[in-house]
Length: 103
Image 1 (spheres, rainbow, N blue to C red):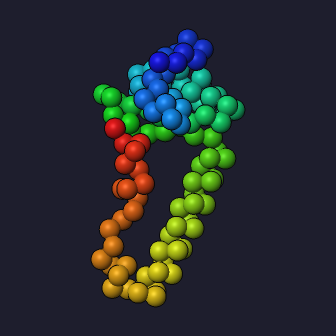
Image 2: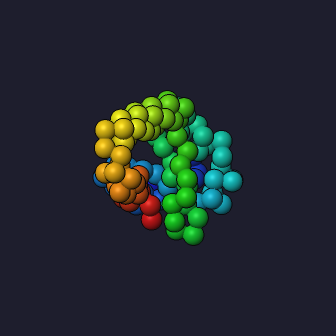
């Protein structure tokens, strides 16, 4: 568990150093969490009852995530136009992409 400005963060994913904070700690320390995400560029994962439910990220990270999502969607649309039957049968990849982050 890491401590930042008197706040305890759990670190359940050591390989990529995601910090975690409970919803209760988030309510008490919102300004610190926002500062850490905005200025330290470190995302903070929010948990409730031990389950990951949200993340606080910098605006730069949000823009990057939106760009990735748009590019992925454009690629899927192109694939669907080339082979509609295959695209309809394919399962969504987002579940596979998020599996390591969902508790």
